Image (cartoon, rainbow, N blue to C red; front, side):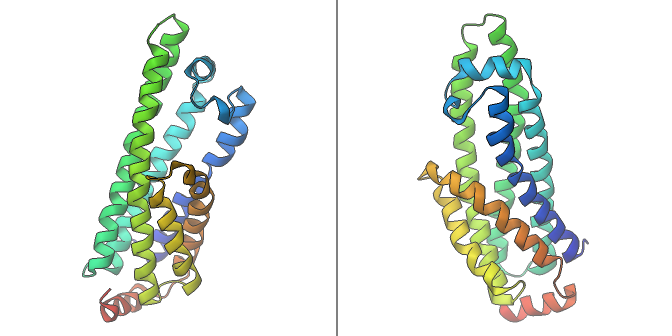
Length: 227
């Protein structure tokens, strides 16, 4: 079984992977000719993707790999810290679902969008419409994943608070961070807030986990907390 420190590194890597989307969207895409205002304009996006498919494939593969690693870390934390904890078990189910849905959404995007881009440049009259529909479906999946991810953040934060797993500030901050992430489903504009707060919190949590006490002590605390 992986150590708490290794699992913490996995959580930090998840945060860094999600955070890597920020410079990609704010720097790489505008440099290629796609601004945030073009998000709903397939006629602008598809020619750029056809010329530079790495703009989709690079982030897509990064996020698939990152969320697979994140899923393994979340599962490992549950196996190490709280198999008997209803709170952590429930949170982990939501967390694994978060990782799984994001993997699927990114896999569909990186596979289908380059094909649509080529079709569009070949004169397909339906490629732009297909991209608009795909974008709506993928965005819906991601918002649902965020709702589940917020539940994991809130649940894990509360578990960590009860057990003293990490510094109290990280646990307390995680609760509003998770609530806002879940609220993305009802208020998609909050995604901009979550893109800034969730990666930073995951990195802070991961670093804190790499500095925890031995697993035997953590397991003892978990049993005493009955979280």
